[in-house]
Figure (tube, rainbow, N blue to C red):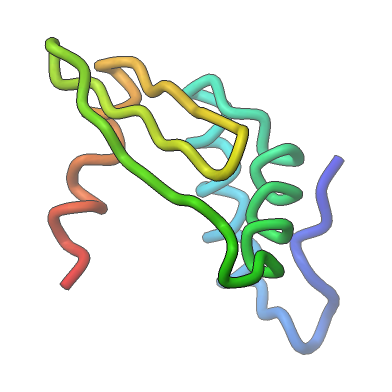
Amino acid sequence: MLSLGTFPPTSLAEALTERDRIFTQVRMGINPAAARTTAREGATLGQGAVFSIALSADGAPSIALDKQTMHLSCYQTDAIRPALLATP
């Protein structure tokens, strides 16, 4: 169970958008609660954090942050490609 925010600071439209994002994570095989925790931990990391991205021979990325590494499948890579390409 995840909180989508409190009303009225979070509108219904924002909550529905967050719900859709969470469902997308689940379809990609990502645990949304763990992703949220990791994002919070990443936001508090100091300058000593080591971050790297590598591509395997088949083009699937691996993202490493300190001692944790996340390997994305080709399906997951295809699912996030539009978001990565849209980022300025």
